Length: 173
Image 1 (cartoon, one colour):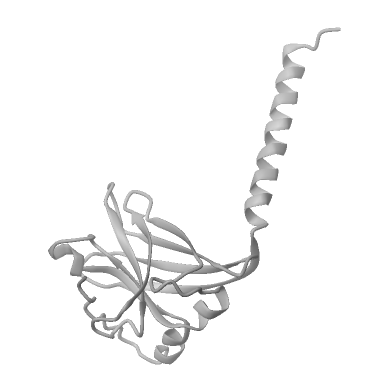
Image 2 (spheres, rainbow, N blue to C red; image 1 turned 135 degrees about the vertical axis):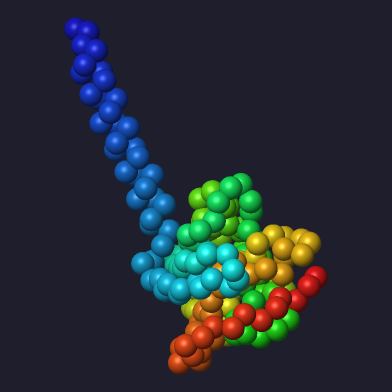
């Protein structure tokens, strides 16, 4: 007995939904559910702001999601994890994160190691005296323009009483 076209189509749709749900559950299953979100404030005349969310992965590493509003186009905006408070001039770059694509305003990075090749866990990262800075460009004069940034970890806890955020100039490489 041959199955009707509608029954085949219905079976295909059910299998597709089931497979998509399984893939989504597998992606979510890599996370513990522990996460913390910090605000990223505009760092220049550009009206760009957003947040950075740090999520704990089951292997102990961190998944860092940067979400910005106010970006556009196909420009890739470099994202740096710096040691120290956001106001610290020439702060060392602890890690280069994946850039934010202007058209979508997001970036996602799984971080397990810092630039000096020392391992970093979720727990260590959320306790680190550090900040996130999103730059306009990777090189040239626009490299020094910070679109958005904010303190994370102990730098956030230590600066929480400040009403005005000052951005320190980044160290040129």
